[in-house]
Length: 457
Ligand SMILES: *[C@@H]1O[C@H](CO)[C@@H](O)[C@H](O)[C@H]1NC(C)=O
Ligand SMILES: *[C@@H]1O[C@H](CO)[C@@H](O)[C@H](O)[C@H]1NC(C)=O
Ligand SMILES: *[C@@H]1O[C@H](CO)[C@@H](O)[C@H](O)[C@H]1NC(C)=O
Ligand SMILES: *[C@@H]1O[C@H](CO)[C@@H](O)[C@H](O)[C@H]1NC(C)=O
Image (tube, rainbow, N blue to C red; front, side):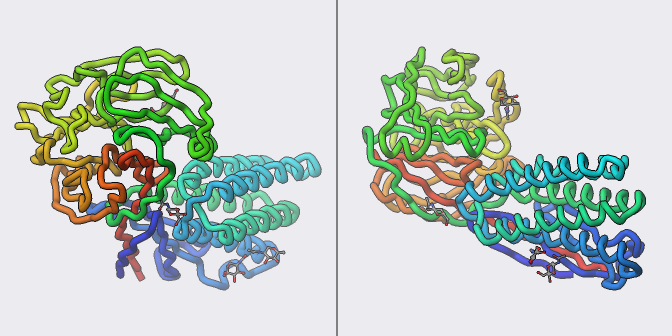
């Protein structure tokens, strides 16, 4: 048994492959990915057991099956390495998607070419391959490395070739086995990946200055729930007395200053702590503790609700003031409001909100004074609080809503333009969006995982 600590930037995914032929898996069952579980420390345990090398070499069909399984295994290894080397580039992922689509159309082709050979099992196998589709959005969360993607693409292409070969030669029984393995692989990978998407903040790198515009105080953001192709930017300059939201089709349009739409909100906003989540803008109505949900699609307020007890209008702002009392944010787990109450002595209170109704689902009281916080942002259900909005600021305190515990941290970040009036995490981009004294900046984050494998042999 051994364990391994890994820091991945910016991605958080690793499977370890152990070859343990003596595990209690019957030889016929071949290799398997198993035990993608999360232990008490949030660790994900993934192990792959490979069959003994000579198991399937009895005849030609067996050899082909073995080769196929190896391909599938290689494919899964590629997925892991691919994630390990994750880069911020969606284009390659897009191409992989079309590759999988190509695989599907190949299947359709075989189907029409060999109507007589097609049997129930082949249909089912095809269904399983289609069920790999849901993996795509998961993969899309990761940015990736060109070489590995093309390797992965090639393996998928090869896999489809082997499948065609096997389809010609193999009987029903073998298909069922095959099918089972594809299904198994897909389930295990998806399980494991969904668990490994979260981690603990270790490091903040950057900033990258995207643009210099607006006043010293403002907010800009993209929608973490939007598809990777949809990269609309929303821009809300100033912290008070404004209700004009500018929309840009992409970061490039934003940089070039090519607006696509302007929204005139029915109510002015307070502060710079708005968030766009799943097509709606959530913001704090000026001079109130009311949260407004505004739909960009309909151009209407869908819901508004008072955040009971929350201080507002500079009663409990962040260190810089600016009516930044109520901070709305989103992470992998959903929508959150961060504020302070008299009941909690002006210390930060975290509430998870229902994004449709704005009702509070759950609340946590921290012991960190809101007026001494520079900014805060949520990653994977942990609230990270900075100690200042000025030069030298660092992430100083972290509160986990999962365990209801806090710890002091010391994670510096480069406050390049001296005054930070907004800092929010975007789970899709795995980046922090900041408004740094009239500069729109982005930071990368490094998250941390401990991944353990257990060798049972
Ligand atoms: C799987 O990967 C290994 C190592 O990269 C390679 O030697 C082997 O030929 C691959 N198998 C198949 C069936 O592609
Ligand atoms: C895919 O198949 C081609 C030709 O059969 C071979 O040259 C190539 O190495 C294979 N690639 C992988 C990744 O298995
Ligand atoms: C996002 O909105 C769609 C409908 O517009 C809804 O079906 C979906 O559940 C929403 N997702 C989340 C995470 O709220
Ligand atoms: C984040 O990391 C990626 C990949 O290393 C890099 O291309 C990008 O410029 C970085 N962004 C920031 C804001 O540092």
